[in-house]
Structures are given as structure tokens and as C-alpha cells.
Image 1 (cartoon, helix red, strand yellow):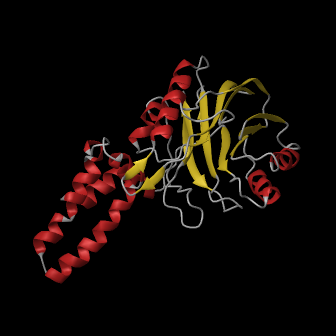
Image 2: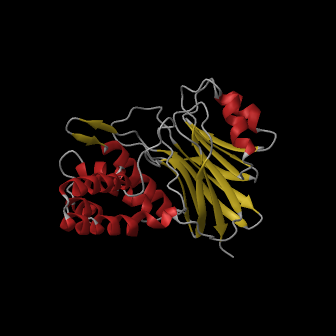
Image 3: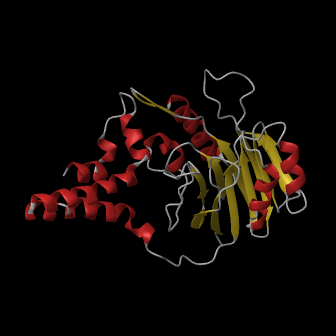
Length: 295
């Protein structure tokens, strides 16, 4: 009953102390692992009542996430985009760039670009992606012309100067102009007293406000948001954009992915599919998505 209640009413878990609600929502799908454990305990107890009661968390979990396990044809897409936090400790930027190019997307968004690695990515990506927009440690490489490039102010109060993790540009595609945002929200930390996500939440509010003010109808958001879409801390962004996919596409940590914290999201367009690419030299997996534009 507790497992089912946490799954169904996770938004009721308070966030006032240690942001426990956000911590739960970050790893919400993993609550399903309680079911096989409880199943074994019910068998050991030979309790028919417990076995019947298990149908409740199974049903709730299936309602929330079961659709992600079922293959679904959501139609063709017009654009493919890749989002990848390449890691500032990546020792193989050339190999990372080659892996992303092999997927042949229209857009490649990168975060944690360092001054040493940036020229390597620029050289490797330039032949197939001649248009780029880089601000601070984030960048966008595009097959389509970019214009109106500007830094996106998502810096929370209390972070020093030189912190720049957002860029906005206008991409001219055969289907019309699209606003493309690349962002890297502040990191969160799990501590003994809960989740530390104040800066991340403040940055999400600034990003949500920027999307709301965007004059172009169609928006593509690519970024490391440092949480899953279930996390209420991202509500200023998730309330203004959409995402989809028939796979969990967990992207972090690369060695044993437990959550998708790297996202491709849209406004006035449809994300038809989301999937991860093979590991690179980063601690994140690249996330790719198909996007269908409005007629």
C-alpha cells in the first residue's frame, strides 16, 4: 500500500525539508523494484492477501510507466537532435564527436565544453555542421543556418561571474524557423539531510520564463537539466514544453544509467521518440530524439 501510495501520490510528499519530494521523483520508476521483493515475501508468508494486494502497486506502476515498455509507432519525424553532456573530464573528445556524427542528427547540443576541448569539437564537427552557437560551456552545432544567437541568462543568484550555461539561437530549417535552446542547469547534491537543489530550481524558473517569452512558436530545448521530468523542481520548464519516448532512455551515470537527466523537449512540435547512444568518454550517455514539426 505504501509503495502504491508513493507512486500514485508522489506530488503529495512535502518538499519543504530536504526536498524529499524531488529526491523521490528523481528515481520514481525504481520504486517498482519493491514489487518483486514483496512478491517473494508474500510467497514465503504464503499470504494470498499479500499477493492480491500486490496488484495495486503493479497497476499504478504500469499506468505510469508501462507504456514505455510497449513498442509504439508514433510516425515519422522531420528533425533529429542529440543532447550530450560531454564531461569536462572527457579524455577523448575526437572519439566523442565521431560517435555523435555517426548518428547523423540535424542538431548536436553539448555541455561542459572546456577551453581545451572546444577547438577539438569545432574542428571535428565543422564539416557536417558548419553552423554553431557557443556561449560559455554550452554549444549548438547545426546543419541548418543559425542566427540571432544570444546568451541565455539562467544564472541563479549567488553563483559568481563567468558562469554561462545557456544559449539561444534561431535555426532556419526547410520547415520554417525554430528557436533552439541549449542549457545546463546547476548540479544537485544528495546529502544526509536530503536533496540540495535550490540553484537548479531557481535556474529552471529562469529558463521557464525565457521559454514563455520566446516569440517563435516552435521551440526545441536541449540540455542537461540535472533531474528527471517527474521532478517538481523542473515544473517551470515541463509545464511549458513536452517530451515523449517509448524508452526510459536513462542517460546517467553512463556506467549504470539510473535516470534520464538529459532531455530533448519541444513546444509546438512533437518528440516522437527518444533513445540513448553508446557510451563515449563522458559520464553521461548521449540522448537522441526524433522531432515532428507542425505543418
